[in-house]
Image 1 (cartoon, rainbow, N blue to C red):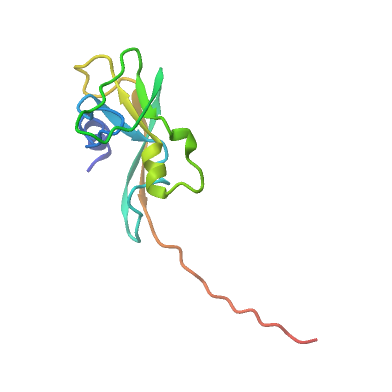
Image 2 (image 1 turned 120 degrees about the vertical axis):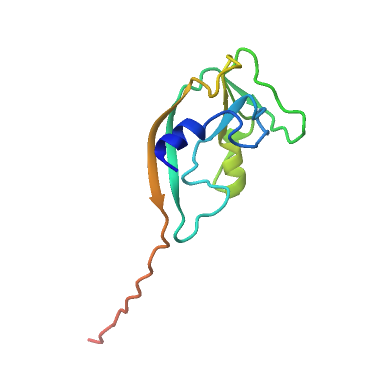
Length: 144
């Protein structure tokens, strides 16, 4: 896909089917560390795009993750939801759980908006992941 397609179509409301922080029909999810904390590990030859956004979090509400079919609605007077445990991410936290806990659920008070106004695409980076090459070297110790 082209960069303009990614920016114009991939951050629309309903672009990801997740409901832990809020109803995906009413907002979008952004990952704080998507380049590092990807839910599926990258493999040799993987390529893609990372879209970097400027966001205005506005008034943030920490919410308990909701794994039920009763989606959490956007909170009146707030602009963003984050996981209540997001500050507890540590080096001991699993890769997948850290990804889940460092997401933002952004929404707009204008329910007719296709995307939240406080989410502005800033840059798009294309990448191709390659496994590092291991170069073996021999060290010869000379007796003196």
